[in-house]
Length: 180
Length: 158
Image (cartoon, rainbow over all chains, first blue to last red; front, side):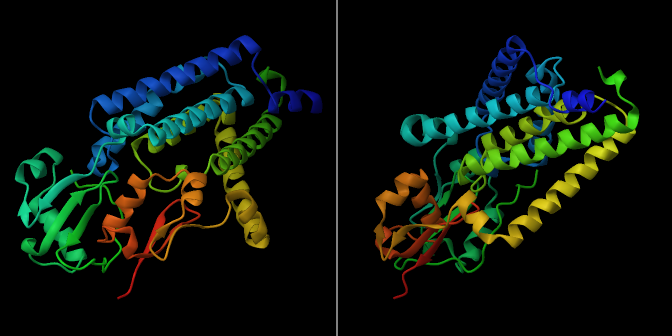
């Protein structure tokens, strides 16, 4: 019985199934990532609760597509490994290819330029004026005309460069999810 | 195949598998570098969610058995705390596994070797600098890539 238990523990798929798991997981990863990019959800900072739920639910929906009918230990590990390696590959590509990086991850968007609020950008990025002013206050700035440049960075935080001197942030802000 | 084992042994086997899965994911994430951990973007979050689902059957073999679920959860908690104790007891392990914090900028000058080795782009460095209200590298006293993947910046004081 010990033998049966061990076999059950370290179960592995046949090489044909193993290959199909790798292929499936890779395909699922590419589809989900491309889908997210097309939907424009490449910036974590733009995400709200519903988007988070969307990602969780999508992951659950594709679960069986990733491993098929396989329920072995190594089958699952192989799937996870494939996903992690694909993600690593995407990150490396994004790092070494600036244009692709800009497409996948996006670029910093100016929200204030030389004291002037860029209303069209605020609108298109879904940033309210109140959020912008709150970000300014974190840098100890209370007037927009003191600002040389304020940008919505790709990780969702708002960076503020003050006129004249290099400022420093007074308070560390956690990259929280935006409210819906 | 699962019918051949009595329920208790089956649950234990699943607990063992769950522990193995957790250890595997933990080491895989460490090995793949700190990028996975810090400055997370949508793709990293998605990858992690997909991974969690991918290993579900590896942990439980699709069994809806309550005893399997209990054994699996217990295995996760136990493995987690064992890992914590081990790392608390052997600080050298953390270094061996995840390396040490890396200096990226020192006294206003970028250390290209570190940037290359840690795969940090100038874009990312400049983004973090801007988040500290700094535009020029020469205004940075110290910039370090921490173990958790975040980049901390100390501005020049003058």
